[in-house]
Image: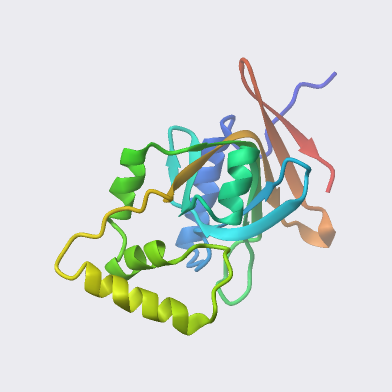
Length: 206
């Protein structure tokens, strides 16, 4: 049996490989380099997906922030697993045709980490985190605007604290799949899986 050989330009560590492609997307001028689609599911396997802002890698985990009471928050509380997709495609951005898929377990960040990040956000975004009962119905958009104005007044001249129902999550990958577009749909796919001894890799058919 022929030993596995990494395609040219690929590393043995998928997190290093992610960083290479991520930097390539950013340097290309891609305006969606930091957009990560996160899919969650209920305990009875009903899926849902949405785009979130990728906030970096911390201790091997892919970080994003949200309202814990949102649909994704409720689903992650009941079923702490997720899949994520980064898609950097060509077009107006002139970005590379690359896709990265990640699957793994999810953990909340510590309260201190969430509070630290919250204080880096714009003040209006901090206010929005307080007044948005994410995924819950509201009477109309004016209701949210009025609530934001009232919260602005309430915290006038004061630091806005991090809501207890808001914070960060990290996805800790068990697998990666790197996809690169090729001519005539002969696309390159490389899958990594976490093993006890490290990562294994294989090339998949398009």
